[in-house]
Length: 159
Image (cartoon, rainbow, N blue to C red; front, top):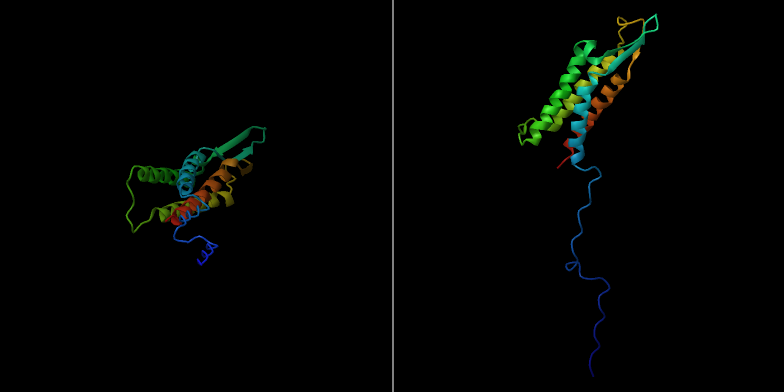
């Protein structure tokens, strides 16, 4: 009499299964680069948008660009330009030294731009015209400065 065949195992041998693919990251690594490019470009352009708007007593509507608000508006422009240069150098294969990570530079530039824009946001000069209010360009500058900080943080989380 022959012995019966043993029952097949309920689970296949784990050594025979193909390995599981690594889980995809929630935020792709390229987002930090894209956000840095866009934030730098928007900071450069926003220096030439209206930061303050108002009307003259005779009904004439006027706007003051960020470039004409003084040194802070020009500094915001140059911070955006420095961000674009930094990103262009990275694309060309030139990287910063390991002691100065690019993510830290982006966070620093974004924090500096945020402080400059917040100063202009909180202190509205009344020297331009009688009824001065904040323009849309000032808010765009603030959002892009914050986006630059976010880009630096995303770059810092890259492997």
